Image 1: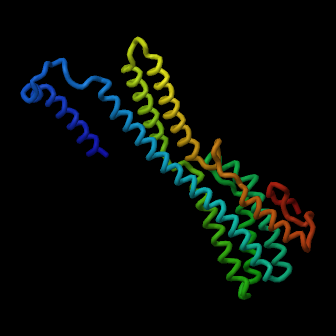
Image 2: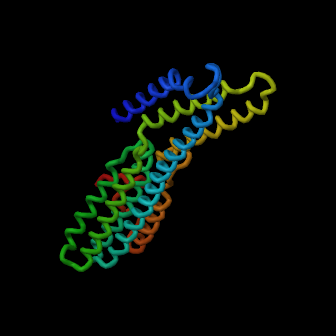
Image 3: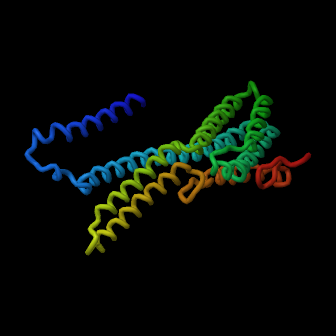
Length: 266
């Protein structure tokens, strides 16, 4: 980074020096002629748009990964419930009940926490219970199916939590905001002082578009909070299916958790 700064400063100094001493020798122009401020605003606006577009693509990639991880986790949980059908009755009921409670804990406890880039220990209570039940069927054919599905669930949850944190550092967002301010101010300086209604309207539109883009970047970079967010639709559907399978042989009162995935007192 230091090298980049040094090279940029040297280039600026070299350009100013060339303007001072070489330009009079190469061009037969007066000292007052040359590029006006309005001629420099075009490249500045182009740079601002390119920076915003690049960062928007990066933020959108993080959003997409978060959505894929959320769906993958729900599918893995559903596979875990289906594999439990091949386990003995006692272990089958425990796994299905734990799956319902895990989904509720993710939806009601961890999802709101992810809006601030955090996780919740609530789902881990039930993932730990999964492994306890797995040990009871170790050596049986269903053991490998259960472990594989649970490993997939754990990987997808970890990816979901990773994408909950901002992928774009705040320094870059502040830099983009500063670039936007400089660009808008430079455009405003170049407006004519009279008969400028059309130019003012255009400047307002440009400012609105650039500001909206920056706001979208800020919102999409936090996929579990804000206006454009990933909803817990998939995990809710997985909970519904697990609850349906559990209620075939049991009652809702036998679930070891409440509606928010908190363990009930014995």
